[in-house]
Length: 385
Image 1 (cartoon, rainbow, N blue to C red):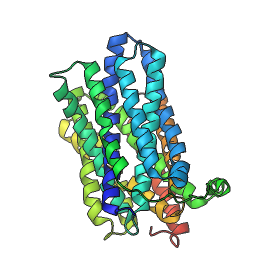
Image 2 (cartoon, rainbow, N blue to C red):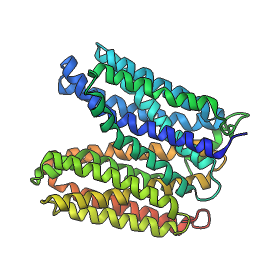
Image 3 (cartoon, rainbow, N blue to C red):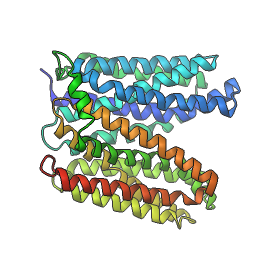
């Protein structure tokens, strides 16, 4: 028999690990480029290996946990990430690096989806609030990683730092081994026909499309805001600080939501979130001063905070017997949105300039709000929208 508190702590540990891993990759890429003297094309091939791996991991984790449970998934994926970091630390070939980045993406994508599904599985009421608290640990890992790397660089070279991070990733594995996890939902065999039929269910696809645009927004804000602010005369160091403020806002608001979501209607929380994102985009249009830029990023982060926890909570409520598979479907849609809209921003920036960036944010959040409005009208009898 498992204890919910210990299992949720394991989920938080996995999410913390996910935050650490993915915030360390930027530093790793810089080191690799200098060490192996890679040109921009080869560095881009590494960057593309990561999201491909995340897509594979996100497809894989749901059916796996429904059939075999969470313990095996978390142990295998954490082990793969740790091994990949050791490869990265000492790799001398581009091929090995590409494989390593793919493994990091696959393991991280599976852990991210797996711990979200695990938290939803062990929560009877208030799934959104519990998922909000889980999301705080991604922010802690993400914000803590620069501090860890900055501390280690005073005493170690980059190879040693990457290797140390790899060994640190193994520490959660010990916890995953010793605690009990929930039994697999489909222990007698995975129902393939049911999983395929879920792809035709309007509620699941609509919720997935909300996450399509939410993930797109989070992705483009993380990838393009610094360039946009720099084009408006904001120093790059200030732009990066503003991005850190956005991550901090997500973590703080999710911590608050872990207390408030059970008391406030989800509809009010989500429409307030959409309004905050629109306000942040509007402020970006006039972000020629540092205070306005920082306020814009805080609004965006605060607006982003609720969407994933609330929508994933809806999905968990709808599919209690196949939570993992349902999460796989919506998270894959979210990754598709991140990839496609990031490409679209790059294309528009090349043709029309980066100045159009805030308008793309506005279009995305309006579409997201419209899709959620359809969910409210058509599925309020199934989920507490």
